[in-house]
Length: 297
Ligand SMILES: *Cc1c(COP(=O)(O)O)cnc(C)c1O
Image 1 (tube, rainbow, N blue to C red):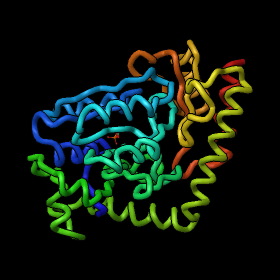
Image 2: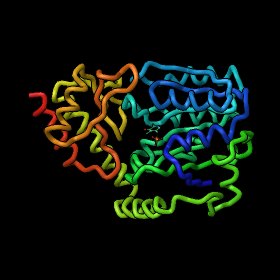
Image 3: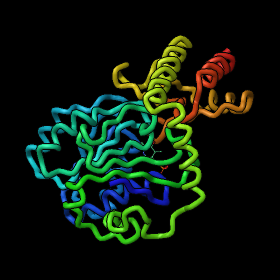
Image 4: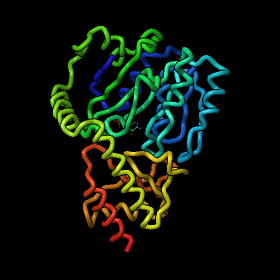
């Protein structure tokens, strides 16, 4: 079931959890960055009994640990972030899905910064509630959240939210239960036209190409990528280490009008992140790398 909500990506995360869990339901949260931390906070805010499985930011998720946790307890839901935008790491959602498929646990995946830019097989991976948003790889203005919801997830819903209750959206089928953000629906239509013109697979390939270009360029400038291993690097955002993050970002902005993002939480000042998602082209990545090199000089 496909559902469109008026709200940013976070409203989709909240809708998933608040529709599903009643107070004291066990929820397993895999935490390895700012956004997976947020998932945990949303689960807690909805009264869930949260078990946190945390991994060092920038490192990969140990799927074996997830497997062990699932064997010990019958969790109502498991929350995982596919593309952890705060660290530039891509997480093994398909491997986690292979585990939850065999159980009653509902797999909720945040694909907010990867859907439309990376290859995500929602059903075959076993994602029960897949959450995305309009302003990342879809390249739309912010303001919509997109969800797909499996029958298994609907059957297990016991939450008591009103506005974000996904069951209301299912009952109303292709009419929203509340007034839709119509201007955003027009933007979505045009954004999807652009995606279909390019072709989804071509779009995914372009993101891969841009990510490789960004990683190579950044390493050539002498930086170390933040993810511990090449194989876990995001295809939509590249994070790298530097102790001069704020200075570099400010100069890029002032001298060249290029905005790149800094680190969040404990990584503030120690990390820079270059986004190459949406309708971004080679020339944008090349210009960013070239201006970055000028700033370093
Ligand atoms: C941007 C982002 C969010 C939050 O989305 P909002 O639209 O700002 O609410 C959540 N998760 C990930 C992985 C993101 O990149």
